[in-house]
Image (cartoon, rainbow, N blue to C red):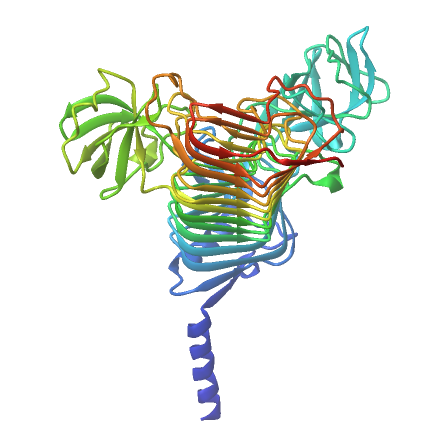
Length: 588
């Protein structure tokens, strides 16, 4: 009887706490030659689990190549649509799963997505570290520079796998072959070189020297100096590190990504995402100054709430965070309740754009004005050029609950449509952003945004950008409630990129600002921040109704020489209802 009661107790405990799946029981363990079929058996067991469950990965290094991966046809926002994709852990159709991965290091050997959360809910990933053994982004160390001869001598790390094809230097690895024409220049301390932005580097006339170094001819830039590192890159972005799609309530905690061949974390069509102490940073143990090929984190068409707190983002080739939706271009009015629309950017299609019952509105592309009386509700979404939306549809037929106003007519003007339901509120709090290309944080959502107590440490472009674009990237949209408070901005704007008009740049793309009668953004407060700045422009604002700039502090820095075209601390273009006071200035 005693044994029976003990057995019943164990069953009750298992029911209360959920099943524990040990990856090693399926042969998936560090140092073991497991196969994709072993991973598939594990994934199937996770899908069949009833109630909360745990996936436990043993600590150690997992060498992941194509033979350990599943293949998936996944269309991923703001990435190259190169299907099928290789995915190590595609977590699909799971509920209440915790992945325990403390001390787990995924060493990716190829253009591989480490992990995907797809059509799932209540998923937590804890402790995972991701890196590439041979990243397609290659770092050269400059050892000699001859400006007169226009030559640069450099060394390459063993991971680069360089090959000379005639005089052209080519890098190759699992799943890629690259001959970059330029990249980003880092100083020996890991800072991006002053006033360099994207610079060319000629690998077309290269010779190999007796000591194993290389010399490039016709390769000159006044910024080149011995000791610098050149991160040689293409513009390809086939594989984010972690993708979260069509899911809800997903948490990443203590996750580190050293390299991903695209974004570090990409979330799309997902409700409620939490990032706690997530790090997208270079693998300094390997001497690298670069991390991801694009943004550290990127969220497209998400809803609910996004919280990113106490993270660290450094060395990436684009922004720390970008939150936006996607405008569809209105192409044809079929009848009073039906439109044909299209995804316009080559990296943004094949994803669910909307569903029955979701709220939408329309904007004029030239003025970025929301059209009065155009708010409506979706009834159906039908793909026109693919079997399903997820099969790669670029064109959609949309029907609406209410009749469309006569102003919604693409024959008369260029129009975009925005899904208002798939827009999130955002907390970006207590993070460090450092030594990255382009910009720090981008927010384009009408829901509340709180950007608080972050350290923006040498973002080479603007530290914060509020944009909105229905003409190029087609990334929505209007910000209506943004609080930027308690942040420290150190030496932003060391290089000129797009949208780098000031440290905080509110710069939507509006072809006809003069013709605009209703401002795009509203209710933006920039208060209580510290600017450590070597140059003049602190805030640039275009098309804002309701801007408050006060209580900020300026520490005049001397690390770099001023160069920016904008010589005003505050620049306003097409703004109404502005309350602004100059920052209190102190010397360091």
